[in-house]
Image 1: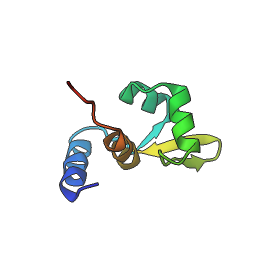
Image 2 (image 1 turned 90 degrees about the horizontal axis):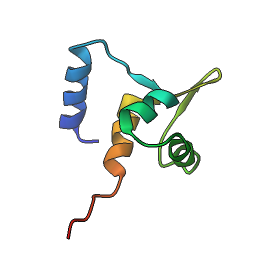
Image 3 (image 1 turned 30 degrees about the horizontal axis):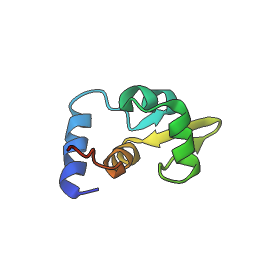
Amino acid sequence: METQIKLAVIQALLSGKPKLGLSINQMVESSSIGRSKIYEDIKSKKLKAKKNGKRTLITIFDAIEYLESLPEMEVE
């Protein structure tokens, strides 16, 4: 992820109540990507995830990197 994007994210996080780690449900809600697809992409290592006990967490940086890695929509 580019440094400028990281800095913009950090500034946005610091301006409110930051969530640096997202649960699967929060990732689904914030990205509009289905739960099954999220788990599929974690399994195929397209999306990085961390474990904290039984909880699966996705860092905000990994979530942004994942969304940026999705293919661009082609318009005809």
